[in-house]
Amino acid sequence: MCGQRGETQSKNNKGNSDMRKPHTSFPTGATRRRLTRLLVGSKLKEVERDLIFETLACTSGNRTTAARMLGFSVRTMRNKLAEYSAVPSTGDNDVQSYASDQVGVLG
Image (cartoon, rainbow, N blue to C red; front, side, top):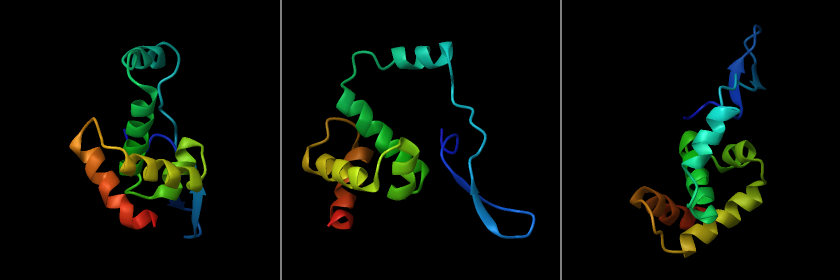
């Protein structure tokens, strides 16, 4: 789900915008383990790719914000997107379409 982790921009009481973290309702403990079990048997590269593209979708394609949310640099994000656009997608067409769209942006 979008907007559960990362940063959001809001207005403080003086009307100026500031960056602050939203409440986090990310599952913990037993719930997270159950969600993780659903991924057992998946290739780590595919899970990583899907998580990156889902995070990009939640940030409206903002690579800087997505990279921060995932805990790595914008350069790493750029390199991973370049890698994904060079490798034929084995999954869903939206991921392949997004990677194809990024080829011109990455240059």
